[in-house]
Image 1 (cartoon, rainbow, N blue to C red):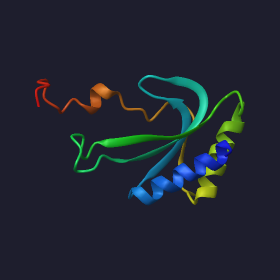
Image 2 (cartoon, rainbow, N blue to C red):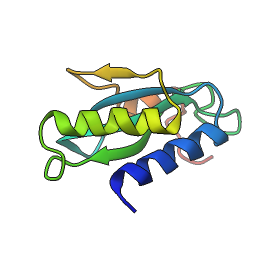
Image 3 (cartoon, one colour):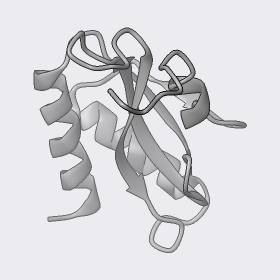
Image 4 (cartoon, helix red, strand yellow):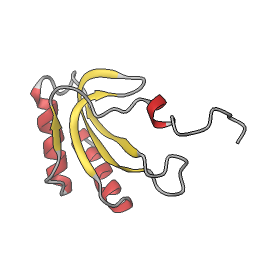
Length: 115
């Protein structure tokens, strides 16, 4: 299965599993990784069952690596995957990232780890 097909399948899975998802296409950047590849992320809130309930949730969907999709080709592949999956509204983040540091995400939790 091609990258394009896998990305479309993953987007469609998330569309059926979650409500009110927003999408971004941006350079791949997270807590433990950063590279020059274009990636698709889904954004929503953690569910009520989570200790992070109500906090913003960013989910990595798919990445179009720089080696196989150099320059703007990765961004175009990500846009095409979104459109093929039925996502026509997304934000393209050209400079920066929507990444939220883990320390900021868990700041509301008690320091005592004995839950």
